[in-house]
View (spheres, rainbow over the protein chains, first blue to last red):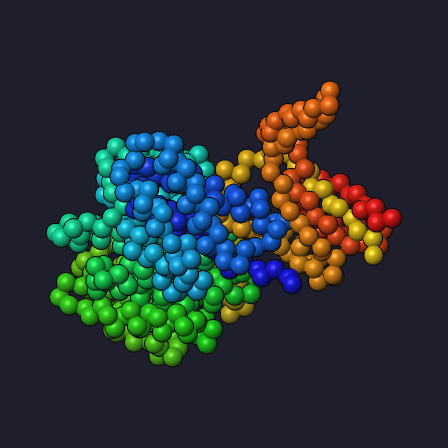
Length: 419
Length: 113
């Protein structure tokens, strides 16, 4: 009988689950021991399975090995708290593993994973380290993979992780959900990291396209865990999950032939992932926007307008403009202004858009200057100002571009040349 | 049908730095290879061997043991029995093995007399 292939990402996800369970049992002061135990279990599988085949329940097998390693460690040192050993013994291998084989079904041990996420996102840890730590612990990525995802040096990521773990030990940052009045503030920090995590995958930076799509889906999966947890299922959590679902649904259509970027206008909407769109609307229903709408709720509302529009032209641009106006009130940024101007140009014409966007060109707070020039080029082209369009696209090409962006701009310039 | 033993030699390797995804990818390659052998009806069995070894000898009519010791250099890390028509064929069966990423394979014909 041939071997059944392993479920995709099983090791990565299961490493996160086992880490979360062991952190609960040992306490976060023993985070290094926990990491070693989990890594040992995975390495054992690598040593044994290639020759004797995959066990019938791979997750239970891994838990069994990790459990034995952990018990060995406890019995060697007498310094562990009472109860650690009995908690380990009670770790149920047969029942703890299931449920994570479908990307959007919550993990077994979801409570422990969410608790671990709170530890990773603790405000005492530097913001950039929080994401790195979450990618390590919650997404189960290795240091090199995190470095690739964040476009950082591997040594720098390793250092961030070491520093973060030292803080966890020294300040006793627990892997649990804070009580009462502290929870909203801490949850805000968690959502901010998840938002950053998703955007790292979503923004068209250099890097391996596949890894980045995976990063988005993983962020969405974890946001789903947070939104599903009774103590963190706030409107903001659901809004963030909705926002990610809508964006993730469009991921496969963002690039066209030869990997060139495709504008929203030109994307094949029939190819948007219906399952993810439905998930987005389901989360959206649970984030009733009240007077204190967060940026996530507003952004989810904007994404929903796009998701429910039959095509680009029939999009409800007036509503989108109104939502951007509100977003400006809670989280103003040049990027928000740029997007608002584009939406407004759909209502009042390309000239209005150009008028609003030109002052943004050269704004040092906009790290993605090429986007400004590219958008100006599009609007000028639409307004029939071909010479301006060409001039602005050339500007865009002069700023650092990713390959898909470059191909896209070159394609548009060729079209403009033909016009 | 002649049987052959594939002895998988390998050097100690730093597994501690491999990410979970990477570990799974390596296992997946071995499984693909094993499944190829199984699909051709060539796979008989396989076992992982631990890296330490104990040597037993007879000295002055007594059994003397040495070890078990961890081997610090190359060891036979695994054993697989396959069916093949010839040495050449057995070598051909080992072709897709991911084991070559970290070691080499010694092939010995099982003497069925």
